[in-house]
Length: 277
Image (cartoon, rainbow, N blue to C red; front, side, top):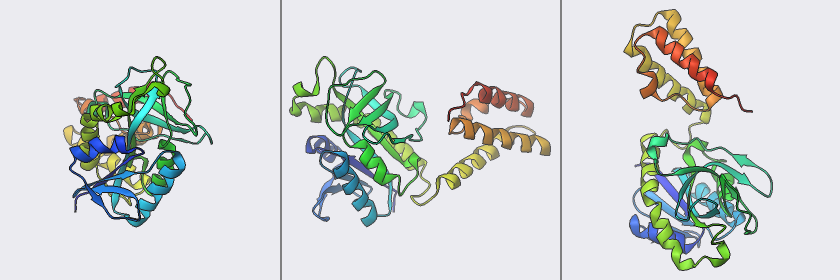
């Protein structure tokens, strides 16, 4: 059975273009708005983080084989209307709780902006540079991250309202057209999740260690490494992962011609990374 991705939206106007694009059929499940094809689900939760958390949690309880969650929807922000945003941080404005998704490489979604998503309890017009706001993402992340690694939970938004055209002036009939703008990025994100699938029950530590070992094995094959070289390289990769929260791009580090130049390159990249608590 292929891995199952569940798309989570709040509104029917957000869900409709996705249902059409992925040829999803209505499912009978606990009175919820659920649609599916052979490897993709779509859950419509209703507005607000409590509805989003309750519906997402119930679905994951009923269907533990779901492999990844992608929150799709419109959001308000200072970026131009129609801009595609991949969340780097989810902030629950009510509680202050934060989540930091493990993002795919930039090349996977070249047209998407990286922004924080602030989930509000009530809509307002406090547009801020560098962030967008919605009303569901924090609820979805609360439920989803209780069951899966943050590398499997994402929020992909399209800017629907801005300071020049606030949400009070948004025509709801525009929403399906805006959602269609992000489908290309959504396809790319779903493909990345499918290709990097490590199973819904793998712990973050197990997955991180597995990825590090795979990269380590690739690197030691490209040039001669002594036993000491290998130990040093492995420690450098661990340090990089601890500081950056990810592993270096294998295409970049694989350009090193010798074991020594590879270590120097990794050391330089580690030194250039800010240490953030």
